[in-house]
Structure formats: C-alpha cells, structure tokens
Figure 1 (cartoon, rainbow, N blue to C red):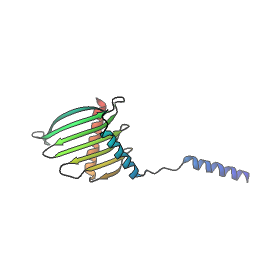
Figure 2 (cartoon, one colour; figure 1 turned 60 degrees about the vertical axis):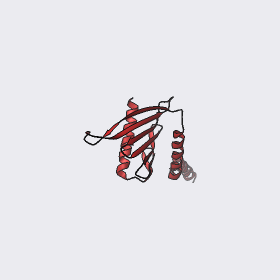
Figure 3 (tube, rainbow, N blue to C red; figure 1 turned 135 degrees about the horizontal axis):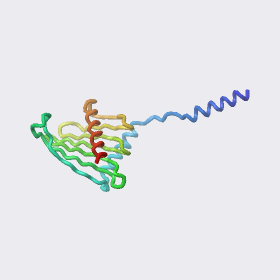
Length: 154
C-alpha cells in the first residue's frame, strides 16, 4: 500500500512538472503587436538609414516608378526595428516591416488602390492576417527576409 502511494505521488509530480502547454490568445497577441508598432512609429531615438532608386519593368528596360527604403534600428544594440519601403508607380504603396528580437512580427501594407493589409507573426508563424491572399503573404515575407539579410550583411 505504501509503495502504491509513493508511486502515485511520484507519478503526480512528474505529470505536474511537465506542465501544461500554454495556449496563445491571438487577440491579445495582435493587440500587443499593434501597441509595439505604435511605439516604434513614435520612437524618435531610432537611427535611420535611407536608400532610394528606380523601379523597372520585368525586363529592366523601362522605368515604371521609384522606391525609397527607410531602415530604422536601435543605436545601442544595432537591432533592426523597422523597414519601410515606399513605392511610387502612379499609385502609392507603403510597406512597413516590424522586427522585434531579430524576428519579423508585423507587416502592414497601405496602398492608394487597395485596403490596408496586415500580417501578424509569432515565432515565425502567421497568427493573423487581413485583406491579403497567401501568394502576397509569401511575397511580403520573402521581401522581409531579404531586407533583414541585407541589413545584417552591412
């Protein structure tokens, strides 16, 4: 009887020590990420680098517009915080990529011809998105990786 009680106690401790898996409340996480983007947008202490250029057609033969890229980073840690890509091709497209702890957390795209698009990520996985299809999601995530790689290589 004592042995069963001891085994039951050990088994209980083992089960409880493993803990339960905490589920992520997506709405709370989205709200937290929105607060973070607002904080970043208002942070005047960030260092900024700017580059610009010309957009061409797929063949590279004809100029179709311009772009300007703003890279905001923390002065002390050199961590990338935000990349803003503004493209003008007759229409205005303003893409904002927000990074936290070296990971992409939010993408916001504003356009003069479409509804605002948003992607929220947690640990590299999309947790929420709005007004966007999977093809454009993939394109924006690829651009974010490219921007981040270019920043790290400088």
